[in-house]
Image 1 (cartoon, helix red, strand yellow):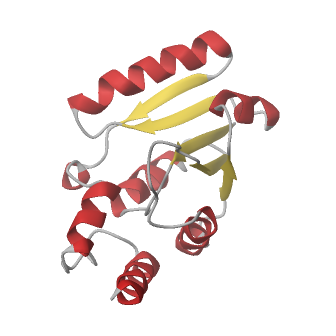
Image 2: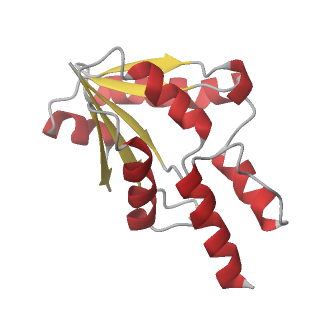
Length: 160
């Protein structure tokens, strides 16, 4: 059975990878789906995020990377995916994710949402926090894959 793990992944973090590593043991195929988000101003383009994620998961046999600008449940239907994976870091994530899961179920009842709680060491970690740290010159190498750290350093050096 296939599953999709959607997100903006701007950038992907070790918290995201924790979810991917655990979920890949449960499904025959995982698609990491980079979603467009009109309300957020991304640091990286879709192409850059796809490159970073692809490099990061290249040794994982059953993990692919894609992007989509539309309803997640439409993507799922088009690609014969019945499971949506969502990570919950904190109680504050739950209300939004719960509403999205119910709306997705209303639109496509055959698509289920599976919530995963990350390892305790990643519950505080978010892409937004990574961007805040890097913006003030902080070191984020412990929180992101090496390729993401390189992209972040290059982005900051371009802006100087």
